[in-house]
Image 1 (tube, rainbow, N blue to C red):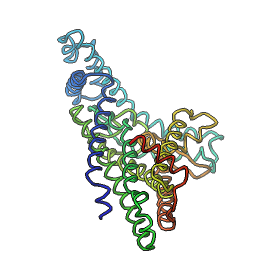
Image 2 (image 1 turned 90 degrees about the vertical axis):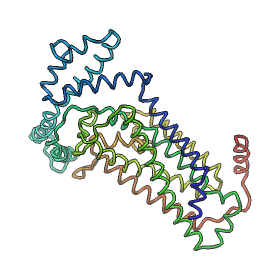
Image 3 (image 1 turned 120 degrees about the horizontal axis):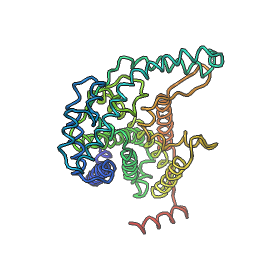
Image 4 (image 1 turned 60 degrees about the vertical axis):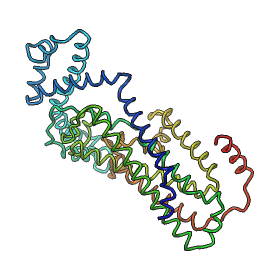
Length: 400
């Protein structure tokens, strides 16, 4: 408990508060796409007014009424506006028409997935029951059968769609957890490491406590950043249709679980927590085995920088594509992984990418915790600083 209080004290609260505010600012900035707040409010007003007029209609009827050329309340509203406002109004109307077209086509698309599975199985090249292709076709048809009964309808999805495509949460959460670990390893430089190491039970207790601390840290930091961002999106766009199916958002047309948007937000958070916790555990293990905090931070920063560079520069179709697939940065692209339907495997073994992610994060977390605990218990304090450590300390002092 004392160590928990030491790490999560006033200094942490101040840094955490600044980070939360920075995250909210980044979200608003990235969501605005260069527009002013008045522009966003105007777009939201027109979008919600149009949806309010059309939401009680069948999608086919609403699509006809939404035609700017027809004699309807939608057209009359358009005629009442000034030229500049007509442009904004038309842009929102076109987006709503696209949403209506998607809603109309969605049931047919799901049926086509089922029909395609039956059709493909009739070809000899796909008929081998021991092949991955055959079993992938079978699994795909079975998975999408779960959403056959999902009824889509016209709603304002802007708050949720804007939120799930925002990724700075994960980078800021990881940086904050590195800060927590840096504070946690203060004994490496204040002389306490030698004292802790003299007691075997003390070292084991310390390792266990730190496992609990990094778990709590990852959960609290990710949770606060995650839900304050969603709340900001809710306030920015005035509403969130959280009870509507997540498939109401076109980018989720290939999401095979029947969930409301609220359920998906919770589902997304759980995966996000697992990803951040796993990376935090890996960083903890690095802090354990690298004897000096400043060197640890430098190594971690360089490693994550290289990982980010590889992830951004390597194309999926490249011969080096494997380095993009197994990249740690990919773990932070949570929504990309769990919202897009894709299977991997070999022969009769077929598994979804979201389940692969969950398995990988679980295995990495257990391995990192095992390494961190063993290192904490068995590593001996270094009596003298190495040349590299002294150089790193000098560099660090220059930036203080």
